[in-house]
Image (cartoon, rainbow, N blue to C red; front, side, top):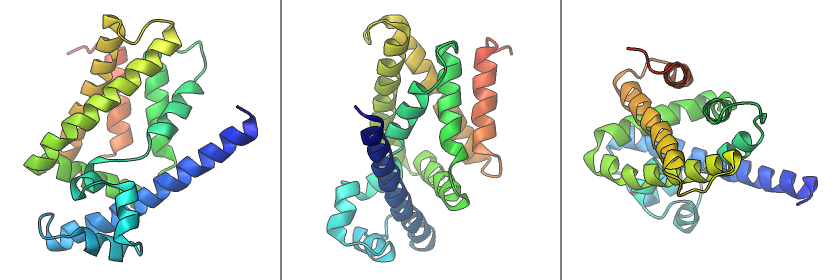
Length: 199
């Protein structure tokens, strides 16, 4: 693929991610004002100045507007751009943190609210499990390729499971401590993991 094509795909993915983030920002505001269960897809679409059919191009259900994000392509690109002399853990850590650096204050607020909803609304917490399994599979494939092993290698899968476990622990902690800086919490958690999790 040419550099120009990669750049166009990157711009398209960033635009899609920004649109999704905008819809989610309006959804979070409505959930805050009206409550999650009382808010409709039509109200979210109207607030985001899109049609309900456009909403459904990005999110298949109201649950998805909270659970789904479109940062995977950006995470993949950031991971693949990491220097080859870094360990897989360092590459994952850098890739995840680099994605947060470019987030606007509004996007960070939306991420915080989404996290709190996911961790506190039982049906969202349950629905997020599938998303986390998909994230684990993504890391499995990325890391397997980087280290020259197969995605079904138990060590690779275990590594991916640990990365997702770190994410879950930080998400839970952040839901209970929303005044904290999410990227700093993530960096601290990965640093502890890299140091062998001394307790």
